[in-house]
Length: 245
Image (cartoon, rainbow, N blue to C red; front, side, top):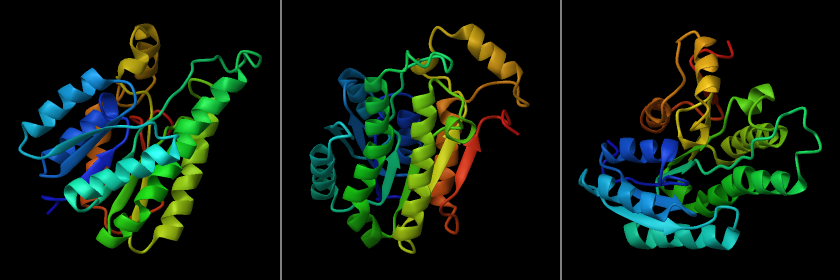
């Protein structure tokens, strides 16, 4: 039973993070919605979660800022008295063609590594003591780009490969109290891909299951890892419809 557990999902005002938050809330888990910019969407998500009969805290924090992250975890524990689940979902990218080497600016590298790798680590570190106390778990949302080297840019793929590596390291050092796993989605129907219908159609047609993922597809896998996969840690689960078989 997960009722009464407490979860924080980073970058959860919209998209995959929101879907995971709602899925856990349906099981009676109290939720902290973390966001950095999307305040209106975060407020709407909070209403949807509270309508499910659980508590929902909003916290604005940039995950690449260690002090903000530590304050967020402190406030969550102060408000709920515990923390059982961390989902590192926050991520950024800049779309740069892989053959445009000069177009991949240094600031793109810095931003994507700060959020996608350092942010994941900062959140995990800040939550580690409480998660060990509660025998909790961490789920990191990475990407098949980290396995294939493909994706929105070379920097993005590199950041997700690094996030996968951090997942394995954390799974080793936080055991046996805390399980740490990663979900590596393929392309997902979120606002990241709005206006790219031709690209989506082409990718869907090349996938055995004939479509791209929805945020809910990823949320179901996250829920399974959190609620049922008690002997699974350090794993990277692809959710790509068989695209990279």
